Length: 608
Image (tube, rainbow, N blue to C red; front, side, top):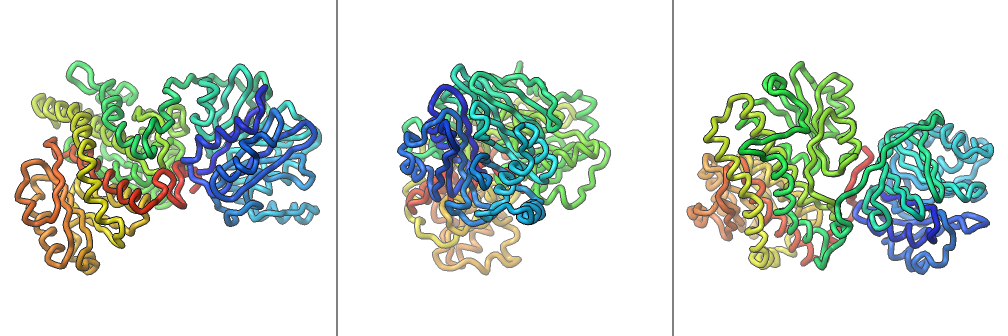
């Protein structure tokens, strides 16, 4: 959440910063601001609402001349969305400007001490404390002041800092909130994510925790919080800048849905070699895999839903017990991590705060951690014992689609690998699974080709008040994600329930005309799910079913059916989720919602 962009170099800074911020809008925000050194003083402009308001206010940055600056898109935490709470924040003299992602946990005590010393606060934010604290410690040496501040503050931060006394320098620091540094022939950049700088450079540096960087027009230096200079290796970004653009689609979400066949193929193909699954990045011997006694999967949101699916797949194929935890609960329930346990953390961004905390807690207890992430060089990728990348490319829409699909197939391959090494699959069974796995991209393409059918049905439920999703086993996991997709972009109240729980209270919510989406792709549970569909239909529900081709018996118990191609029952999530993504998308579009940037949501949740 929130976005930071900074630039110092030969170009006018404001247009570069505004352009970079526009590439970070997917992160979620409710106000924006910019600060530029104009040769004499630091100018700031802030605006509540979309970035377009700030662009209009500054005429695209043309009214803010200067070659160094910082910008920010804010997602409100401390203090309501307003111009005065928007970043950048400055000291009382306006000689120091700061933008900040994260939360300063001890800001109340710091604010009191600064107020007692005569500092005047104009906002309700925790960030303003940083501007005044920098002023308090500043004695002509910006690096010294910054490191002293970092030793005093508690919490998480990604910072961009300007000092009017040093117009040829721009500073940044990082702890538990993502920040990258870019370098081009005509300047240097800071940003929360790669898309912000990709137009200008492909050479980036990933900052680690408690590091500070000093940028100037023709170079940069990295330091520890103890002012010791360190050397970092640059990374060359190899994905196409066009991948972060809409390419003619109405929304990023629609574009990313249509990228799923390629995403799934790109994630599978490097790991299928000579009729086997080879996961070199796992860095585990066969003996270590056979020694796994329990797996803990930890994630948030849609990534958590892939973990629920993985529980069924790993337990079913590899016969390893699996627990799935919401990351925000895992760390605080004092989990029992016995010898032989393995923790798998899943995150699209690789920066999800709660998931990152779970990783660190697990490693502190001596447990092996595998990260499954999409962003190369992200915190989880660097800190986990091993990392599997999903190769989905940049995902801009807040509601994940292609990253979710990539996470699913990554977990399928992991389950198959573990099962084969542990002797739970013979050659014929393994080959059958591998054949079905490699068919998934074409089958997803086929389902995406049915968008008009789904769109026509979705138009009927634009005005729905409540929608329920039900399923058993893997179908319950699909229901969780289908429901989340709908609620997060359409704002319709939606819930997912294990179908067997209907009689334990849920069925009392069914009224005439209520839409119930029933998932029934598991052969051994098919008849039981049919019974649940009959139950809700008898109470007035309109039932939309998603099932495998050939299951015509379902038509008597439903009002509308979407068929998916035949595949192994463990893999049906990858296919059944496609019509549910399309359904959520077209309902949201029909309601006039901002599909790519749903209200109150952020793409990367980097605070607890």
